Length: 401
Image (cartoon, rainbow, N blue to C red):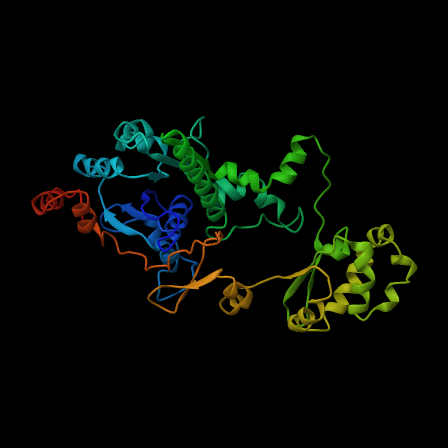
C-alpha cells in the first residue's frame, strides 16, 4: 500500500500543543492528509516551547519537528466569521476533525460537535480535554504535568520514598500516550463508520489517561487494599528487582521474576558463587527477608565494573535486566535504529521518533518537514474551491494569513 493505510483520509488538526495534534501525526504517518489549522502570526503556541527557560538550546525547533511533521499549515483566525466559514467548508469534506480547545472556547468559536455535525454527518469529531467534558472542571485548562501526571497519583507514586519531593514529569511524557488513546478512539470510530455510514463524537482526556497509567495501584485502592510506605531503593523488599549503580555512574535494573531458577545464574555471573549456598539467602523467602543485606552486597559488586561490561555479561544469560538509559544513548541505539523506532526525515539525515505502531504490508510515509505558519494557506484554499479574488478577500479581512 504505497500511499499508506489512510491515503485519501482528510484530517483537520484544530488543536494545540501535543496530545491531540500528535494523534493527527500518527494518522499522517500512515498516509492521512492532515491540515494544521493555527492562528495567524505565531501559530500554535507549541512552536514556542523550546524558547522557554530550561529547555535545551538547539538550532532546530525540535518540538515542532516531531509533532508537526507531514502536515500542511493553514493560518486561520477562527474568531472572525470569515475564518469560521472556511473551517466549515473544509469540515464538510473532511473525515476527521481534532480539537482540544476547552468546551467554552468551542462554543464561542462555533466549533462544537453540534456546530459541525450538520455539515458532515460522516465526520469523526475527536475531542480532547484536560479533565473531561462534564463537571465543574470541564473548562479547566490542563497540561500533562498537572492533569495527567499529578492528578492521577503518578507524581507521588514514582518518588523514591515519602520523604523525597514529588517527581517532576518530562515534556510530553503524558501527552504522547494520550495521543495514542485519541488515535485509538478515532480509528475505532472510523471502523464504526465503515459499518454504519455515520460519523461519531469521540473523546479522551489527560486525567483519564493518567489514572489508566496508574491503574494497577489505583485499582488496588478501589479494592480497599492496605498500602505500606514506599521504601527507598536501599531498603527495597526484593534485591533482584532493583536498580544498581555501576563503576562509571550509570545504572541498570534487574527484573528477575523467575527468581528460584535464576538466582544461581545471577550469583555466578556476579562472581559470587558463595551466595548460592549462603544460608542467609538459600531460599526466596530468605532473600526477601534479608533484602537489605543482599542489596548492600550487590551495590559493592556492581560498583566494580562499568555499565558496558555488565551489559555484556548479563546479555545472553537468560537474566532479565534493563539499562537505565540517558538521552546520549538514543542517537546510536542500534536496536532502535534497526526496528525503525528512529527514522530519518525524507529530505535530511536528521533522525526523528517514529510512532509506535507498525502494520505488516503497509509502509509508513517518510517523515516530511514540519510546516511554517500558514505555509500552505493559499494551496489549501484553492483545493477547497476558493478563487484568487476570494482568497485576497479573506486575506484582507485578516481571517487567513
